Length: 252
Image 1 (tube, one colour):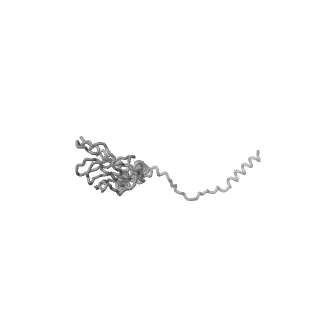
Image 2 (cartoon, one colour):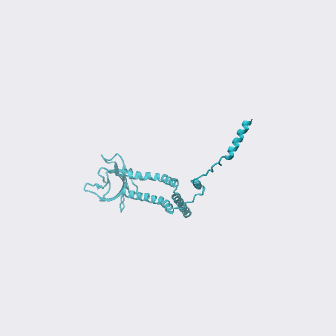
Image 3 (cartoon, rainbow, N blue to C red):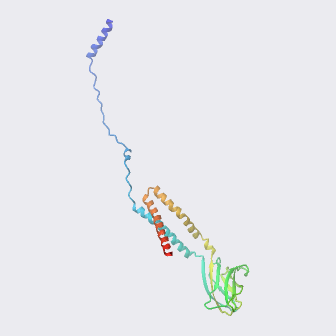
């Protein structure tokens, strides 16, 4: 026990004479905390109306429509499948009336008639038939008017040959030395022209192109362009309603 107490006293004496603990000093710099992405909680600013995009969307549909209509007018003049011809045909020495036209061999005869400036006792017409001569498929027929003013049955007096674009006929009972005749021709090959088919097909796709343009404008954050496109449709419907209302009022 005595040894143990002596050891405790020795430790107490040593602790009293031991140096004080060293002071710990922290060194360094304090960095500022910068937040990234946390300021996005603020409300986004509204985009201003882009007037250039708006007016582009407003007038572009009308410009496209105008171009399409213009192309139809140009195509109608350049690729008109119909041809109207009027001729004064004089009788030859053999009593035949013969006239050649400068037309394509693909031209068909829609109709023909005599348009004399003075009264005649016969009426001419053209019809498709197999009773004409070889190579001719359009028959020229004559109907003679009697003294009571009634026309008799049609008689085949000639034909129109598409191979050489020539019409010929011989009147059965008339002393006329010239005949005023009018013919309308039609070319079915022009009806199937690629330009016409492409133009007509493009009209079917125009509504889908318009809807796609509106969707594209809003998806690409071009709100002003989309509003302009929708405004063009609204203006068109408003003008159409005014026109219908005006016609109804005028009709009443």
